[in-house]
Length: 219
Length: 139
Image: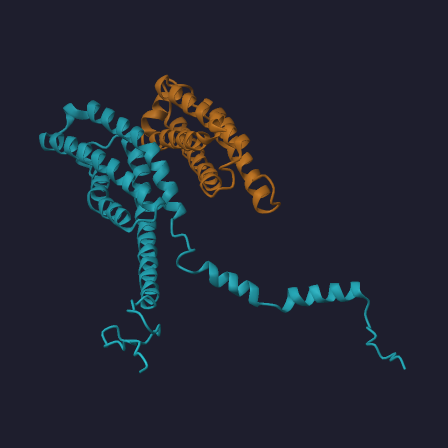
């Protein structure tokens, strides 16, 4: 007898499709957590900092105008300055300009290529000559701060402040990523201990004497 | 196109130039008011002009903040129309303000400069920000 007890489906195929799509979307979590996990692997994560890169880009464009303004103002007020401040201001302008060029280049390349030494050098250069110098230029009234100078020094000081904040965070993130990669690399290296012919087991001591099989002729 | 790549630094530099002139005007307020009033003026005129100028300059700085947020935050950084409008308005403001300072224009003229060259780009910037953030178009 032919069995008429084929499983009669309660729902039509279309409704089944819709319902299974709905339940998949609502209840399945594994694919998304796997892609989250994959994104956070150290090889796949990008630590280039966008705010730092943007501020360096705009800083590079702004620097020639800062230099022109500061140089012109120094020229105008030079004869009214005290002697110490004449020498001091010329020295500060020269040092600031040279260090600025090196610093912006280091930061730009280091951040873009995620290189820790360049970013660290950039951070040190920003903290050491640039910050005290710009604060001196901005706040020391003995150097006859003219209104135009005040304006351009304020803009430059804001740039330097933003760069310090984001460079600290970026350098930390890059260093942590390099350290994680290094630790993971050690696990990869463990699997590649060289073995000298014979058995290929991973727990073998490479210095133990090996058993050599010789063909003993049957007599 | 290659020409579009230089819109971004151009816009930033013109914005900063306008900002620099506004800050310069803030710090040299005394001389500017004396320059823009007629030769013989009363203290009443002086103080009323001073208040007016301080208010207008502060509103200008607020508009700047709005426009910088829209530009650096990415809302209108790649929107060429807004960029061109902003470059034109702020460049016009730079030229007009330079004339204002060097040629000692009349006090009332600052209102026109302020209206066309600060309020207009800030209003269009707000429109772009709202359309990107709320309506998700234009980027």
